[in-house]
Image (cartoon, rainbow, N blue to C red; front, side):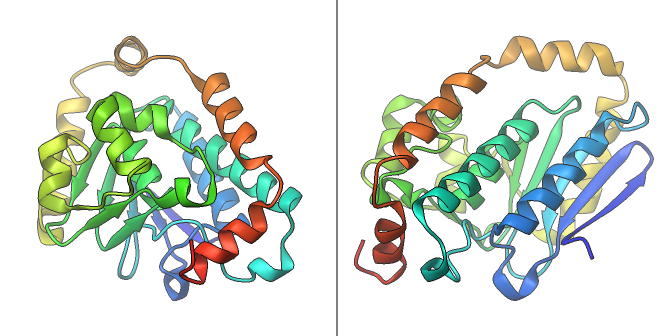
Length: 240
């Protein structure tokens, strides 16, 4: 059974993360299912991709459950899969709307940041703690949104953000309570439909730098430093 449900209506493909018991945290299965859902946007009938999460959060981040059964190699493979997922979202053939609520930390915040338009519930919170266990994930994408200095404050210094601060720095493109999301998505879909799909893709390509190989290399270099499992375990135990 897929951990991501999908629905296509009126050109809008909605992918809903549905691993509610773990806060939609990213284990290997959820990453694979979400990447498969994003790939459905290749269908010419799709004009807009919407990412949302069932339960209390869009995505609470990397799932550290069962870390004792992992090793450095398996964790490296998982982080590479996450980076490839984030790239798929960032470079999707249609615009992507992320609907963010709850606690979005680490890879969950990176998933939100990878979208074209990022709508946050006023109660949302964000943090990028990967640097605490030596990981460089999504930093260039984040910097392209909030600027270099702000990105380093969020990553190297570990500063967190509430929804209002996220909107002020551009991480969130708008703030809107969840009961208004459906109407806002419908409005965005109507606007996107006025531009043909090929032009929309060309516009997106012109607006963002092509850094996929560089981003992947930065992640692999950081994750390949020996001791990754121990560093994550220390962080998860409140010692990182």
